[in-house]
Image 1 (cartoon, helix red, strand yellow):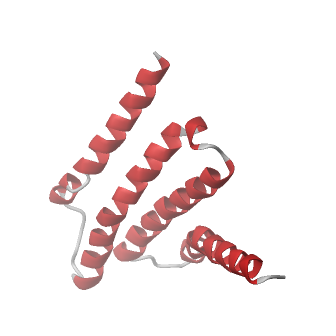
Image 2: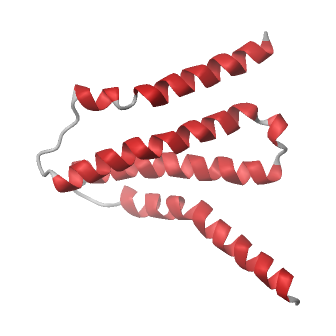
Amino acid sequence: MDENQLLGLMVLALYMLVVFAPFLLLAVLLFKKNKEFHDKVLLAWLVVSAANSFIEFIKITEPPDSIPFLIDLNKALLLSNLFFFYGYFKSLVQSEFKWRSGLTWALLPLLVWIAACLANWFSQWV
């Protein structure tokens, strides 16, 4: 095996680890008893990360022109990482942290992006 093939295998192994790590962590967290609020935020974050990883895996096998909605959704999921990081960090630092309506406003850019992607996707069909 030459050096380029070995490097390619190492990159593939690292990529597969990054793709499937959220699924493994999700399984561990699902079976934890007595989940606190920060555990629930982390669980939601891992679900989004697992979906994002799955879309990344699909992007390898499919041409991007055949899955435009998934690519747009992938960008929205990447945007949501900022929201989940903020919520998870705040819930770890503040013991009395709860979901408030002000936190919902932080989701507004993500929801606008998803609505724009859906409108773009439906406009291509019409």
